Length: 284
Image (tube, rainbow, N blue to C red; front, side, top):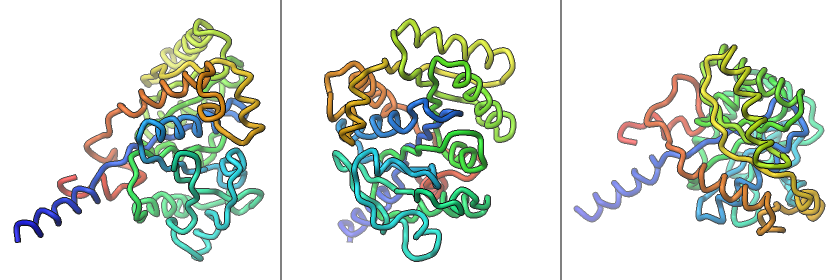
């Protein structure tokens, strides 16, 4: 009897295991957001984490293409009621699992807030176990980007040393802060020429956020400009796989190790979150 009880407790503990959820966003397109998402995911998998990647650019999916993966079903089939979330998962390098979105499907970018909420809740129904969910959002400040960003525990904002990138990153943080109460952001300075340039980029962003917003921002990674990224994209591989000793790959591995140590909140934040059942289950 005791053995059965121990097994039951073990199963409950497994089911209630909390999952780290990181939204990777960036305000504008072209800042390398999907590259950051995938390289962080693969590096975390290499470090022993069970990683799920959600391609949350619902109408312009590209994660599967970047990895050269074949997709049978995607989120459009899920939203049409033809299958469950488990049925559309595909396996990428080092065992990462990917939730593929649709590409060139206009109605996917016109989902209602209720449909966004239903999609976020669907993650609680997954039967497989994960340590980390990385949400690769679309660019901009659409309802879709805002819904998925505020449903994550950590929001990682990718910024390049361009005025439009800084302005759009600021605008995204402003909306998430003032309208949805998100006040902590993790900053990735991407495609910079030196550590100093990355620190100066963060300083520029800090100057405007300190002056106008009630937020706390933290520089979590400086990813150097690396020609090997372009080569790895052409090969449909991540740089951490294709060129593991390159400067950018080393920086991504350091980011993955750092992200793996970010704490998971004990309680739900008050708005809808991914894997919400794990957050609110008594004893979790």
